[in-house]
Image 1 (cartoon, rainbow, N blue to C red):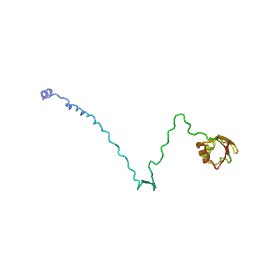
Image 2 (cartoon, helix red, strand yellow):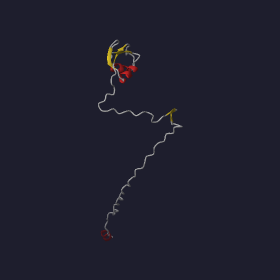
Image 3 (tube, helix red, strand yellow):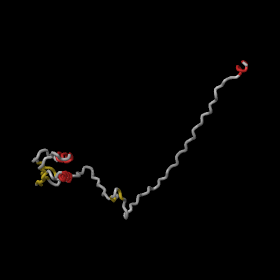
Image 4 (cartoon, rainbow, N blue to C red):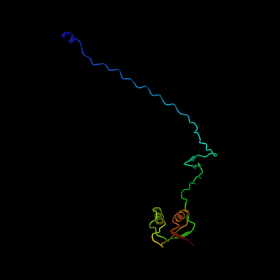
Length: 133
């Protein structure tokens, strides 16, 4: 029996050969297909949260030429703070500060342009405005 044991050799199990990954095919080139445009139904416009949505009705803003002045002054106006900013919302306080006003009765002469007019409109209950010649 011992002779039989000597003759038999123990061998490690053989590993299967590694499989190669299949070669990747080059993706086919996509042809440029025209994109589908959304058609807006003018008879039944879309409704979101109970409100009718009108699409693309805003006019395009004009791009200004380089060096142009978007807010040209058309004269001068005098702004006077007539009421205190205590107890006001922060945005109102910031607007009054941006106009250059700090104390009640303080006046400031500024150029008349749409930006300043918008600021005055926001704090119209707190300021008085006069045109300066």
